[in-house]
Picture 1: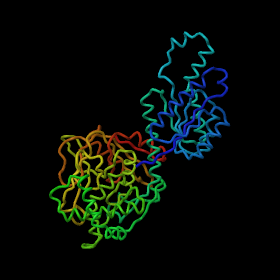
Picture 2: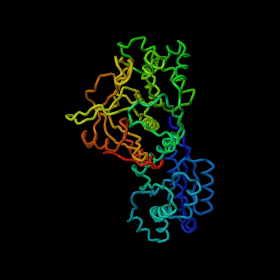
Picture 3: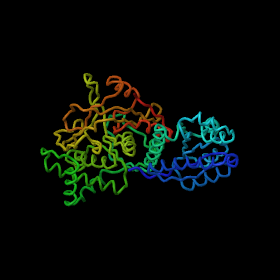
Picture 4: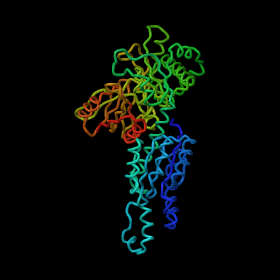
Length: 474
């Protein structure tokens, strides 16, 4: 699950105004309290530095934010303010900053305003609504100082502005979750999939997570230690969380349950938040026994916030973790086929899947052969919940640079392939033909993560916080 984060908030104003315009400061701080309530409602710890209206208070706010180790700062322009009250805060705190250019109302009542007649009173009311006055000054100074910043413009009743603010909070939460993530790597790449090969140093530098390289011998040792009672409990979990086919051989269920218990133990032992794996092992070896019985256990882990990427696709493990931290799921997928009559694209995989975002019950079914891989065993049959979806891929471009590739579409009802795999039908605004071309030409690996809901806007903000380019298809 996503960690709880600390968000800093400070308002800016000009102390010269307060004795000149009676009640102005009180009204402006009232608006700031409204903003604070909305941000707290996002489930964060809010560190409110109050109204910063001179350079001394700016230094005090910076000290507070550093001491509290905030993850993100919201700067609320309450009225015109000098940029000298802003720059010290962000320079000394050194965390991403989002400037809130939010008027109290969408439109001033001009007739009522002009009827007041008292120019002093009218000036005070205008200053209550002149947030935009400081936006260019702040932007100019940040640009010249090399400070990265983001701007939200609107008003306090503006749904679009609040959606942006919530997306910034969510993106900060995901960024913090990625930094805290311990990613386990088991086995090796699927040999010959050149597109999936990754630079773990580059990944750690981009996302801040730790990589723990694990041995199959350790997993096998944990598997040998599994007690019969644990296996029985795991089978009951299979029955609760999967629709277990009557075609499943009880011996295969036992085998998958034992491996699932061992995977749970490995996750607990190393405090793992995600896994990428692939292994084949010699025929008849215990490692082959593990490799051909992992799908059910990996699917359970994925649905319980430890996403597991097959074929040791580390980049897609990162994408799946981002989607899971976002609350969208993130199921392991690849292109399956196109239906040019219904204008949909099929995506799926032979597991693992994110069963928490399934349309209906998830089937646990037998497979007589794992295509392209050794052995046979149990597999997952499911489709992603019908409705809006977002695709995400972590892409390594030519020259090694990373970027995020995303697209929004719809998971739509209709016939799917009943082959013991995950697969769903997806419709995109540009059509199946154009989508496959546009997505493919962006250069991702052939895997991607699919989550529910339209969250491309949040992913774009995450990219901004991580200093990663985000490319959006459709």
